[in-house]
Length: 237
Ligand SMILES: CC(=O)[C@@H](O)[C@H](O)COP(=O)(O)O
Ligand SMILES: NCC(=O)COP(=O)(O)O
Image (cartoon, rainbow, N blue to C red):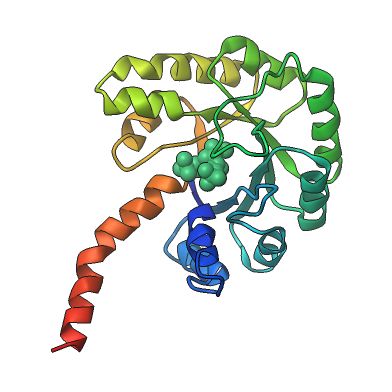
């Protein structure tokens, strides 16, 4: 069984664009759980352009499913995660000014840093996951630094799938087989969507969790748009 964790960054982006509290991030998170999702993911970035650090703390009070916080472990982020105590922290090596996550960790170059950060989180009872490209040496490195799980960075798979290149799944399947051998749990995310998720799931042995945000929120807009336009038309009759 693969858990669906919904990334709500985009809800915060919409809220912040008007400065008020519409849509209400906490209510959306609660509703997503009530609709059946098994987790809530956030990725607070240092400039707080979508999720604010205070959101991370407020969400802890209401999320009853798995709570996953992603981000680059700069000191401010480490402090936030320790204060919030989520179910899982996912470490992502994104630059401060990155538009979105765009690479996995080099788990060999950053071995001692990752070891230290991971042990800090694990000592506080927080499950750790590391964002990695589907590269065998990076998966081995993730096991070496003591991570509980890897999160496979799926952008290249999504791009290949959109071009009908089904071979793009191969490095992900191989990485998953290796992770299973090394007893690392497997998560995945980035640009997964209603189009590409089924094939991904079918080809990844023991996929524990996917976190999906950008496509899921965009798809929700499209799938809800007809209904809402008609609700307005009815009110204007
Ligand atoms: C870690 C990852 O894969 C990202 O997809 C991320 O969580 C999304 O971040 P943004 O919403 O800021 O693009
Ligand atoms: N970890 C990936 C994530 O949370 C969402 O990525 P995306 O679906 O917004 O690309």
